Image (cartoon, rainbow, N blue to C red):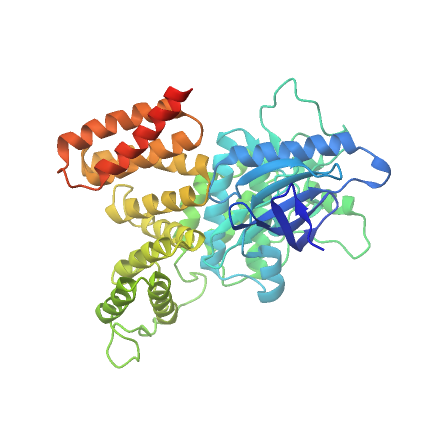
Amino acid sequence: MREIIQGRYELTARLGKGGMAEVWEADDLRLGRRVAVKFLKAPAGGRDLDRLERRFEREARLTARMGHPSVPVVHETGRHTDGGLYIVMELVDGQTLSARLKNDGPLPVPLAATIAVQTADVLAHAHRIGVVHRDLKPSNLMLTANDTLKVLDFGIAAALEPDPDEPRLTRTSDVMGTPGFISPEQGEGRPATARSDLYALGCVLYEIAAGRPPFTVAPGAQPLYLVFRHVHETPRPVSEHRPDLPADFAVLVMRLLAKDPAARPSPQEVQDLARTWMAAPSKATPTTPPAPRPTGFATGTGHPPPATLSRQADALAARGDHAGAATLIEDYLHRTLLPLDDSEALPLRLTLCELLLQSEDFTGAYDHYFALGGALRRNRPATDRDVLACRAGAARCLSELGRTPEALHEFEALLPVQQHVFGPVDRTVFDTRYEIAVLIARGGGIQAARDQLTSLVEDQQRVLPNGDERHPRASALLSRLNRILNAG
């Protein structure tokens, strides 16, 4: 029997179940997309239900407040016909780090470093807006097929500076977090801080590098003994479990596990250091010379050269088969194993991103733009044109995916850089200004969007030729906004 929530979300498969909630995959019948629906599980006998409902509602607020590409977007919250609360969120296709470890064992150094950089970026953003996660662990970190990270489950997250009118949701005796990843200060009953999240990141990096957490206890032992070990004991150096780990990377992991919160590196320092190993081989042991590229850039490899491949993709796209053209390029890049920032493959990667956009695979396009932009930023300045193209493409994908606050944030941050690089009247700048106006209007700021468009239309008429497609596009939206305002 079909179960449909609020006449809109048809449940299709249960994805997971925990002590407080269960998560289902669902079809959004109104917008034709897949989503995740998280339901609060009421405890037996209704004990502590009010407190759990307030915590569940706070999770929705804090997650929605994040507005970060690596945090699933919240679409809606509500109460089911049975009285239970639910949250509708972005559905993430991927694998948790705990599942990845179970299947594959310790992760390669470049992937571990990539996880460190992306997680630290989320933590830096969360801490800037006053949110501490408090339960970072491998089962709450998910990798997509392109190794893009998503940080899940802000169920026990807390505001660093809570509203004084907000009711206290934890008892004095509560220890918030998972025993295997809890910071010493939390284990002692002190409040979690931003530095507590960094300790948990250290535990995560230790486990994905070593294949085991920093502390364990015998089966059947009390969880509080694990907390005791985090408070009072020093873990064995991660390099003892993973001799090939670069020495500096091992030092970074152990610094994150410092008992003194002030001694732990900042998220920015973690990102700066970890980027060194994102595409580098291990430095702990001698390396062998790299093998010749198994790619189509050399003749006789069985792969067409990039120019031929581009022509084949162009022919498919000209017939309207953008998805087929994207598949052709994606398969080629997968088989040739070229690094993301390879200069010869860069035009193909950018073409692939655009083809995915045109075929309306917005999630796939976003993942490719995000990964490519991150790789380019390691060696190029923020003003590099390819870096800017990736940022703009990723923002367009966020907009198409309905992630309006995130898309608006990205475009508004991108605009001044584009104006500096391209000049204030460049077509790229006009496109970004138009996207900003669209997103402001979508968010309900009709008057502000009209003001933005009025200025944009004037600037475009002054600079662009009469036949430019940007004229009717901006004018049509401006007319719609004027009608809305006049009707009101």
